[in-house]
Amino acid sequence: MSEKNYQIRLKSRPKGWVSPENFDYVEAEIPDIGDGQVLIRNLYLSVDPYMRGRMNDAPSYIPPFQIGEVLEAGVVGQVIKSNNPKFAQGDHVVGMLGWELYSRSDGSGLMKVDPSLAPLSYYLGILGMPGMTAYVGLTAIGEAKKGETLFVSAASGAVGSVVGQLGRIFGCHVVGCAGADDKVAYLTQELGFDRAFNYKTAGQVHKKLAELCPAGIDVNFENVGGEILEAALWNMSNFGRIVLCGLIAHYNDEKMAPGPRGMGLIIQRRLKVQGFIVFDHMDLGMEYIQKAAGWLKDGQLKYHESVAEGLDQAPQAFIGMLKGENFGKQVVKLD
Ligand SMILES: NC(=O)c1ccc[n+]([C@@H]2O[C@H](COP(=O)([O-])OP(=O)(O)OC[C@H]3O[C@@H](n4cnc5c(N)ncnc54)[C@H](OP(=O)(O)O)[C@@H]3O)[C@@H](O)[C@H]2O)c1
Image (cartoon, rainbow, N blue to C red; front, side):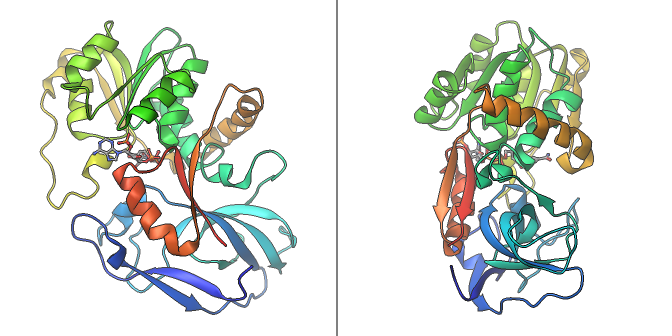
């Protein structure tokens, strides 16, 4: 275990695609702790699409990263010193901490996790924020019901892979798309999706969706935007729901892209389109964690992750995830 602290700080704001030059890898002091604080040795760090938005100097639901400051992420770690009665030395915890080996916390937003229930990295994925996102989006926003057709984009990723599996548990006909043939095979052969396709090689996506969803799409769980959203829109059933979870196809755009054509279909087909942020639904998120632990145990939920080794690999893991190089949830194991 490292005797020193290392951190990744924001060096500059990207214009268009994020690049390794936007990050600084620096040596730093292991922080001292005061009253009520804990020192955490970070073990796994999550890289997530929303972080690209935080690299811009623009107001959003979460403040932007600041130049020269340590980046923030979902992190699982172990408490190594504690002046906080809620946490003991040795406890494993998850929370929003730094892209660094050692973090100081006053305990706010920090949650204990049980390493005997699941591998620690799962608390950043299927038993963490992405899993909760899938559940909240599918239940509270999409109101998916038995017998309905569910379509999910970025379907092999951290959120999408859980959306599809939950859809199967809820009795939906589940169709997904992903950007590589091995990912597509994983969806149908491992995760139980009814149908899946590679959006990069399928030709016109709206035609592919018409073929795979002949009764129309009742719930579109949108992770991508752009052409895929437009193709889904054209295939929606009357009274369908579009769950706007994310628009990753646009996160590195330098100029705002034109909206999808076919907006009139929202009226004609009486669609509901709703965006959401998982953190507004934490009660439901906690309900999901209880259920998901059981589903994982009895094999109804399966999980795949890509693990990058070492803090210095975090920027590349993040950029790779935005480009689709991850297979399942992308995490970074800290040495
Ligand atoms: N609303 C919320 O509270 C909330 C919370 C968490 C995540 N999200 C959103 O959920 C979405 C998925 O996030 P995640 O953490 O699960 O990431 P992820 O799916 O594990 O990784 C991102 C994936 O997006 C796909 N992708 C990238 N660019 C694309 C493009 N131009 N067209 C189609 N697919 C593209 C890539 O897969 P392929 O190989 O398949 O292209 C890539 O692997 C993101 O949009 C994210 O912002 C929202």
